[in-house]
Image (cartoon, rainbow, N blue to C red; front, side, top):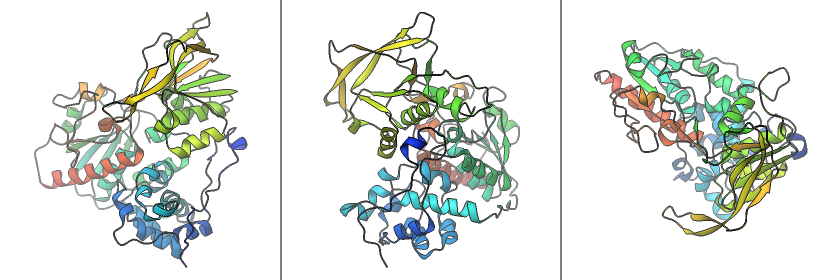
Length: 466
C-alpha cells in the first residue's frame, strides 16, 4: 500500500547533548521497516525527474521500488550499476538540491528521502553480504589515476571493471582523499571509506600511497612508465586566507589543516600524539559545509564556546540546511553578518582575540547575491583563542607546474571538456575539485564516471599516447 504521508520517515539520530561529546555517527540510519515505509512514498513517476537531478544517474524509482518490496539486494544492484560509492554518497550528497529537489512529492510536502534510502541499502549490503568483487579478465591496457578522492575512486572502479590495470597514486599515507581527511567521522565513518577502497583492491586496482605526482615523478614520466592514459583527481587542497593581520599567529588554522589533524591524524583519539591546541573558545570563519564540520569538531574536541562567523545571513549560507540545523542543535553559536578584520596577539605569538565588524546586505551584485557591506563604527572584540579559516580552497599548483601544455583557468583549476573531461594534453583527463574547485562529492563522482568512459573510448580507439 502506498504511503501518502507528506512527511519523510524521520531519521533516528543521537541526542545532541550526547553526540556533541563523541565522534560516533550522528545520524543512525533507517531500520528495514522504516526504509520500506519511506520507499512506499515514491510514486514511481514514469518521467523520473529525480534521475535527471542525480550527477551519476542512479535509476532512483527502480531501486526504491525494490526497497518497498524488501528486496534490498536487488536495490543495491540497481544503485551500484551507476554509483560506485553508495554508502558514501548516501551520507554526504546534497540530495535536497539535486534528486530530491525534483521529486514530485515535494510539490505538496517533503520529497522522498532518496539519500536516506540509498544509505540504508548500502549499509544493509555491507552488513549482510560478504561477497568479494571478482577481478575481471585483463584487457592489456594500463591507466594511472592521480589522487584517491571520490572522482578518482569512481574512475578507477569503472575502469577496473572494464579490465584495465589501474594504479592509484595517493600523496597521503591513507587512501580516500577528502573523504578521510576532510569529512568528520560523525558524518562519514572511515570504515565505510576503507570498505570502498578494499573493494577497489579486490577488483585488481593497485594502490600506491605516499606518492606525490609532480614531485616523485611527473605526468610525462607516467606515460614513459607505460600508462596509456592519466586521470588527475588531485583535489583542491590549497587553503585560502583573508590576508588580515594576525593570520600567522599560533592558533590560526585553515579548515583543511584543522580537519586533517582531527580526521586523518586522529587527534580526537587517546593514544594519538597529534599536535592540536587545547581550545576554550574557537571562531570558525565561513558558512559552508566545511565550516560546519570544523565547528562541530571543535565542540567535540572540548571547546566551551564555538562560534561560526559568516558575513551574510543564514539564508545565504552555502552549507546544507541539515548540517546547519545539526550544528545549532549541538550548541554552535552563529554570528551572522559578522566578519573579522584583525586577529590579536596575546603577547606570546598566539591568538589572543579577534576584532570583528558587523555587516549589512546591499543590493544583489552581478552574481545575483546580495553584497555584504561593513557597518561603519561597528568594530568589536571577540574573546577567542583559536581561529579556523574556512574560506574555500584551490588546486595545488604542483601538477600543473610540472606538466607542460596543461591549461588552467584564472582560478588555477584544470581546464577540461565538460563532456569528456579531457584536458589540453592528449591522454590526460581530470575531474573533481582539481577542475571545479571545492565542490560536492557526488559531482566529483559524476566527473570520474564521465572520465572513465572517455578514457575507455580513447584507448580502444588506439589514439597516440600523451
